[in-house]
Length: 275
Image (cartoon, rainbow, N blue to C red; front, side, top):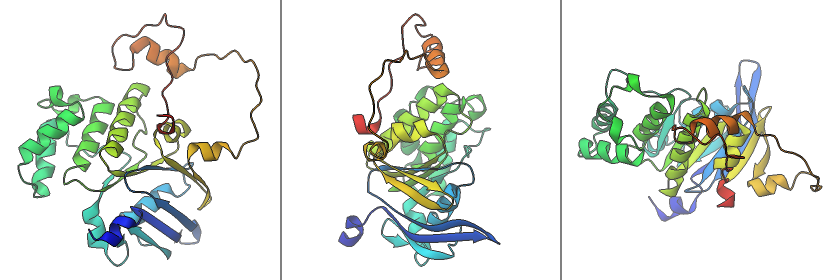
């Protein structure tokens, strides 16, 4: 990578437009993603989040505007972009007949990575899947499959990873497992672009959050910056009832073991900006 590429944002999007027949989906989207950060693209269903990811991963051509990933233009340097990224879609792309380790070894061989067995073992340990390495993926829970899917996407050490609604359909415990895996990606220096429709997910994970609405980015900033858009808070005494997720995690435990339902509350997770 050249010095100029290192100095550029990991992802740069300017004036991106895309329509499907007479339906405009993207109407001039602009944002940058800093290297080694988690950027959440938040929006409701149909807002255009997946369309943005498809354009950035060279699966779809934009009608107008420019986009660059890892210093490469997605339109004119598509091969270089594909070598720089990994894409994890909304559903885990794992082979259920194979074991977890066999899935990883297979992908490592397809990508011509040296010593695929060692790579597989390292990733199994990193994502806390070593004990289940020899089991068929058909026996894995939803969270384990998602973690394996993300682990597979890391083979070859891509500097940029796209996670398109990675926790869709997962239960609260599995979602927490995936959140931990995503946080570890950024800690290892990987740039993550995360699309989600879950407000709490963006709040917990992202360094910066952009809201995509009707084809445009309407706000973009850190959680603290976005909170400044609201009127000043007033102090009131409110009796806070536990959420259903609090009850669930208190009963089963965040690690899947029996929790202590007698506790008054479950400790709240801190967002990345509060750590």
